Length: 332
Image (cartoon, rainbow, N blue to C red; front, side):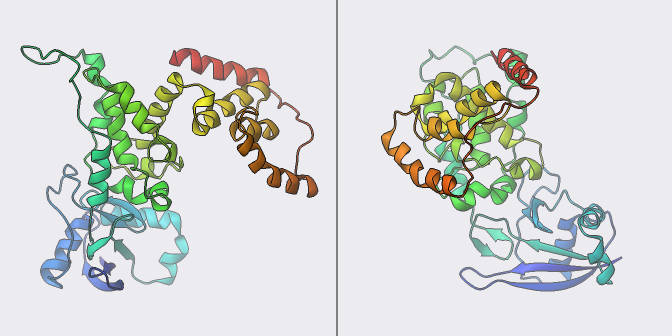
């Protein structure tokens, strides 16, 4: 079958352009096979990373038709099927199917599909991604773990550092301080590791401002593109819960946001917005500056009739409360 490949071409600090290549391929050919064909037969200057070709090394991460993925894992047939589900009209207007290949996001381009991953690796290093045993006496052999303790590390241990989650991270795009989902997934591996003796300091570090877990916008993109099912958002949520178990609502606005939300839903089935702003931003009337910051918004809402003067609990509040309490008891 014939297919058009539109490849993002760019030299460092130059304007990007898309170059078109016409290929004869089979549905089972991987995207990496196709890129190799272009490089070997049509344009030897095309730059991209590759290595194992077996979804192990993570080298060939790139954006394939708008989403970050591994070129060695995705094939022509599956991609065309995915595109057909997204938009059937595109296949009707274009006689030949198209593949659009671009570099990973949130990182500067070096050349074509090769990006500078310095920020990716620097942010990983920022979470201290190695087991700390400084507080323990060094044993004669090794630190032993039970199968149950080791099983807690299996999911995060599957990360191959391909950069797909980092590429799609909305929080990273707007907040350069946020370390990224890859780093926080690795961070949870350290928190869950029974051999580590630095858990409390780690959680303080991951709790700091929007650099750590509170910078996550919970958009789920990292989970949706991860080729190894590491589920970075799930790991970030686990770290948040570890922090919440150790903190009081007065400790920070981020902590209050989570705790107040749960408490209000337990109380009324949904969020009483009048209390939510006062308790989170105003810290239960303790933060005068926070309360004053709410005044202009509250006044505008009153003028436009948007401020709820009363609160009516939702139907089934008792059931909602029971579900939340059951989950909390299970966590304990």
